[in-house]
View (tube, rainbow, N blue to C red):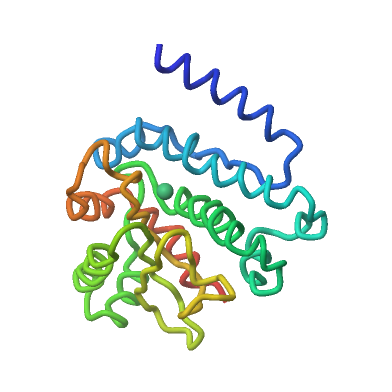
Length: 225
Ligand code: MN
């Protein structure tokens, strides 16, 4: 029953977006592929309700701006300071939400499908002391982000790997970012990302995340010139 309802909701939504500039991506794995670490209901709702709302609201915001519709989401966020001031916040929230989630899905992988390579482990060890030390620092950033936001591993402007966190839907590719860089890995720490399964236990969700990281995608991004 729930499945039918979701399918119907999805079809209606898909029709509404058919002509829109920005589109909701499809996952390359099943909603249940990250079980038991991230449950399939959370994945379904996260993509089709939360992420979809950001896409929908972004397209509505840009309805009267055909020039801005021509930009990629990365270009739009990198030039946030140049868009009309009355739509800057809407783009920051909804464009940011679209970009962050689109990237997040690609950095997750089905359980046991992705192992970290010795080369990547060595790079993380060089920056953080060891793989475990990297994880500890990343988890600390995830837990100390007050309220809603994201934690990131980025390659910063000097080429170093660095862990940062951002509030709400902000990101290191925005013109307004305090610390800019190429996103390498990110984790959604909004309650909607984990509340169904973990309730208020954000720490347990953050620890579980390591079981579903797409390390191949992380490595590709680390090696990006
Ligand atoms: Mn989210």
